[in-house]
Image (cartoon, rainbow, N blue to C red; front, top):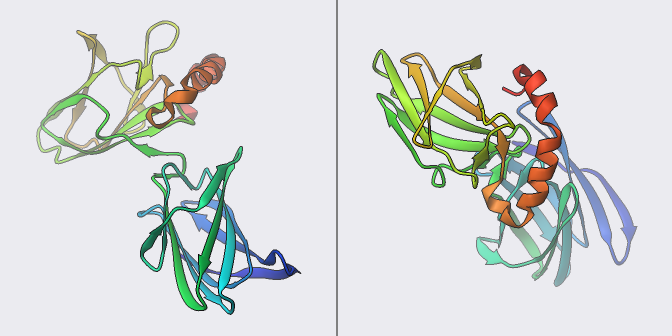
Length: 247
């Protein structure tokens, strides 16, 4: 998705130009802000690669650029590149945005790329979940911290029915206060069973998505897990009352 630079406004000799780039993806709108002593000709956002690519032109040797990225758009463990060479810039995580300061040398045309690991607050945790499945395959497993859910995408459901068995672990997902979960199969509330610490969910050949909702701990942020748990428990009653809204 390519968006043109907008509202390039001269600020001062120290900060240079400030740019605002509107990004619309999956019916959500965001703004990328950038400030630097150079010209940003274009910004391209790729949701599949979770990346931002900036085409820039510099007329001076010493360049500095600060980019403000909404964390709800892309986040996680970032990697940065200047003309395909990896950079290690300064970065600071704010409450809702990541601030990245890139300094580099060189007059002329350059390409700066930033690659994250999450898109729209959704994490790929396929390699972190212990599960077994019959009569189908799992293409990916994602976590959505904002809804405290694990999302299993199904493929090759070529039999009359199948079964998903998920190993329960407090590191990944925690049940509600009554030791229960909420399970949806293609958006419909579904029964399940628990056997030997495994969550058992049945599905048929037409199903494409299984969602498990509980109190969720994000694997990538173990250091703030207690805070995540505390805030999650506050919303348990509301979540159960309005669970149809959290599909």
